[in-house]
Image (cartoon, rainbow, N blue to C red; front, side, top):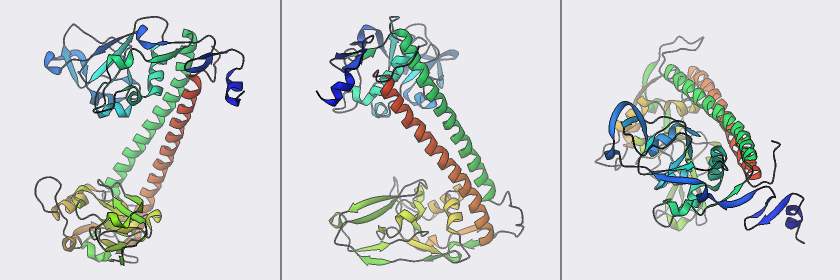
Amino acid sequence: MAAQEVVAERAGYKKTKLGWIPKEWNVDRIGKYIDIRSGESPSKFEEFDGGISYIKVDDLNNSLKYQLEGKFQVKKSKNIIPKGSIIFPKRGAAILNNKVRITRSDLFMDSNLMSITINLDLLDIEYLFYYILKRKLYKIADTSTIPQINNKHIIPLKIFIPPIQEQKAIANCLATWDTAIEKQTQLIQAKQTQKKALMQQLLTGKKRLPGFTEEWKEKSLTYFLDYTPRPITKPDIPFTKLGIRSHCKGTFQNKNFKPEDIAIDKLFRVKKNDLIVNITFAWEGAIAIVKQEDDEGLVSHRFPTYTFKKDIGNSLFFEQFIKTKRFRFLLELISPGGAGRNRVMSKKDFLKLKITIPKYKEQTAIANILNTADKEIELLQKQLTQLQEQKKGVMQQLLTGKKRLKF
């Protein structure tokens, strides 16, 4: 007998078409326990202050589990989605994000949303919420063209149904993880807000650090930077090609990039702490400081490379400074072009840009404070990821009956 069967056939379990489950559990079609509704077009509603919330797909971004009120309130008496229903996107890319919510109040919803309301006391709404979350909307949907979910995808869906008290116990256990995740998310958001305010104060000189009183002076970028191209012949074997994300989101790597996939013979090598910019998308914030993991990566001629002059420009300070609205505005000014995204930055004008920042020692002090804030946020984000992964593991165990709770 296979090892898997030996484990599965332990006392108290039974075999079903979906695998081994506790003997008290059943497997059934979800359609027997629910009513399904689709939303309606906004044209059918009259906006009314003090009315009932009208929810659109974008409103699902405002919460993680319980749906908050929408931006609009409407006046209508029929086809209300009752409190305690589950709502989720029924078409489009939003399905891929697995946004499932429980309504905390009666509401209306637009035609891109679907609702599930339980019609029997044998199924707990919170348990069903976690079950759908685990199954994932995009695995339920028809994704052959545009992702969509219809009644025919939901009604035949098979679900494990424990006794109602065990369903509630499972939901309560998973809710503790949701609470921890929500608190961690709120803490990260608060720290990010604090960091943003700190940047605004320190990078503009509105707030000075103790021991620094010297006036900041306006200088051209050429005072801090040297244009430092490192041309090489394109390798004849796969290499690491670097790119820059827009909106000051840093670099990304294309590892094992094939030489034949780029139609130029000369590339440029970058080094840790270089400043690099994508001249095509500089106006969109495609500028970054090279990290240790990007050292020796290769870029094309569209990514000019600059090094910081010793004891004049601090790369860690500039990593923060290039994210400011003022600097982004300056990049737009030297990136003329027509409609759309076809705008190219002038490399000559780049080094002529005028900025007002402190001397090297104060740059370093400011950078240390802001980088400490970044590291704190990074640690909190890692802890959030750990919580999310732990919750996935607990869901897998509880929703399949592999682990039982006392209730």
